[in-house]
Image 1 (cartoon, rainbow, N blue to C red):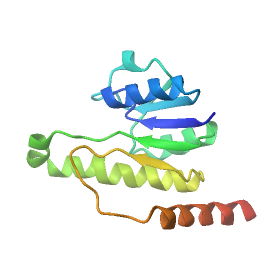
Image 2 (cartoon, rainbow, N blue to C red; image 1 turned 30 degrees about the vertical axis):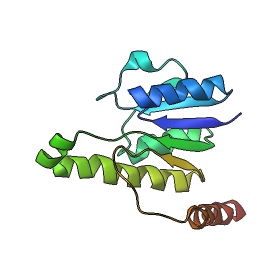
Image 3 (cartoon, one colour; image 1 turned 45 degrees about the vertical axis):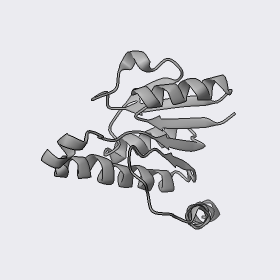
Image 4 (cartoon, rainbow, N blue to C red; image 1 turned 120 degrees about the horizontal axis):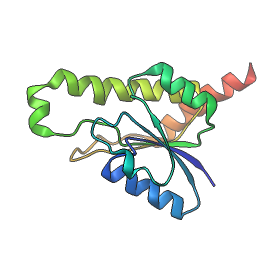
Length: 143
């Protein structure tokens, strides 16, 4: 059984993911600011209210809950609005993901499932990312 952090887990896709994880015997923790999410959709895990741009909140979460992996659904995703407010979208989607990844590295959480809506990412080498994260965690544990 794994403990999975689901960012944006109070939304439609994240809540269905939590349901499937529970059905497979995994534990989920939902981290959501409830801007577009709904408290009543969190039925298959504990809800922790917070914003992915809040480094202190993420550090506290990782310090108090051992997490095996993160499923990242927290993002703004309305194309029309993104054209009108690109700075807001950059702050939440890019900066927020950066803050989340930094918190994961500090907590030695080496696995992320990144959910992209209507965007095709460039190919990446998963093994090199994993090696970098695990190398960091090995160095931290050696201290």
